[in-house]
Image (cartoon, rainbow, N blue to C red):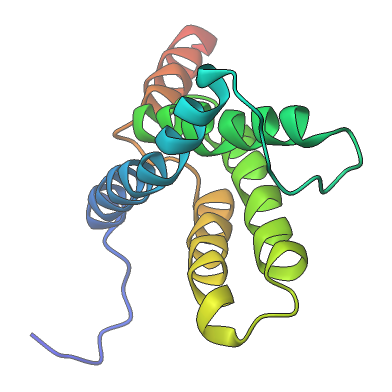
Length: 142
């Protein structure tokens, strides 16, 4: 075994994509769930209004990304679309909401953003609902 081998093990990549999707999806759920609770409580909502649509709609869009799209990410269903919403949310968090803060406040959103970028490029992997759909589609083409 050589440590400088640059061959790609495709099965290993699919396993790593599964682990990363699960970890990042559940981690982002921990950010989205409190926001979902805030939205469902129905009280006075004070939330950053990044599109000028009002704090309640902004919170709803953030809940959609951080909670609903994280579930899609975990399942590996509509992965690239879901990650697109998550990326947009992390861009807003890192560059707008925390834009004037130090890097320590922006770092987490940038880390999530970089992981989401990799998932957009690599896809959900074989061990996902997207992977099963693709496998069935290819089988029906024969």
